[in-house]
Amino acid sequence: MARRKGPHAEVRACAQRYRELTARLAGIGFIWHGSLQKRMLTCGKERCACRTDPKARHGPYAYWTSKEAQKTVSRLLSLDEAELYEEWINNRRELERVVRQMYRLSRRAAKAELKLRAERRRGEVGES
Image: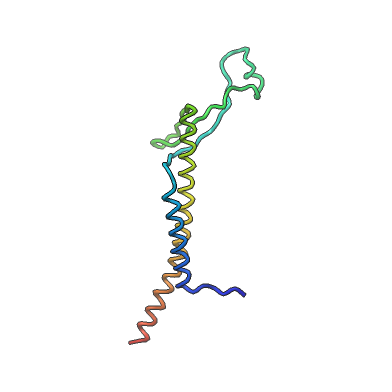
């Protein structure tokens, strides 16, 4: 049967894991909002195969999409822009994952810390 950690050990474990997450944050590079999509498009030429054969469509073309002033905006990107923004968007997603983990860890730590404080208060009352 596994023994449950006491609140002291739980707070120490949470603090250690929190430091590890903080170190991960330090390694995340630049971030960018929005998302990327790659689209295959048809052109306006009547005799082009792209009009009838989906496999013959042109592209892929990279588009960046985001919300600006509560409206969705999309912009066609150059190859360099697409590569850069994809990396930075992935960095932002990693940042968000780490921050979510930090919130969950903080909730665990708060429960343990509150138990410790309650124990201390009971000890102080018992000494009076």
